[in-house]
Image 1 (cartoon, rainbow, N blue to C red):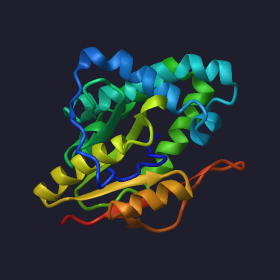
Image 2: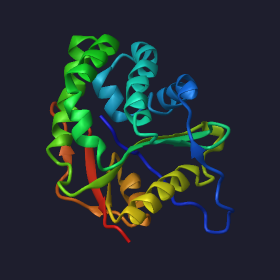
Image 3: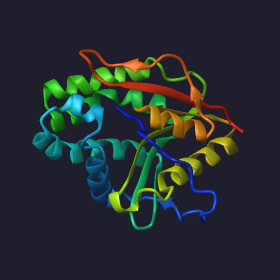
Length: 213
């Protein structure tokens, strides 16, 4: 399960924020930031409806996703850890798929059998829509409450897009709201096919693609 809810572009009149690669020692703090940011997200609510349980399991869930991106030095943040973006480079997809059973076991340890099955369904639906062409995948992004509105997440996404452009690769993301889609369009993304719709009245994701520039 990976997606971005909204990532407004950096403010044109503001200086570019200082960004850096995160360190593994910061994984706990970043997992807590992501868990807080996604506590009310439609996808996490669909997976874990009970809010108290959701608060308990999300740090562990994001710990696994952080490990996936840390394997490729693909966790970018602000120096004060007020904002973070998880992403993966083009060569990561096949390797992560080859480790699928390992990650499935870790997700089940965190979520339990039923909720891990819900997560697996989301991942299956997402995988069926991923572009075939090599691409950078912008996945989870979060900004601490008091730091929102400063274009930090947009700056983090723009940093990955610069790397994708330098490599001549496209970029892919999934927007979970109309606002997220509008933000992605502001960064040069366009819609890629129909929405990914979860069953039983679940939320939907909007696949977004950006050609290299």
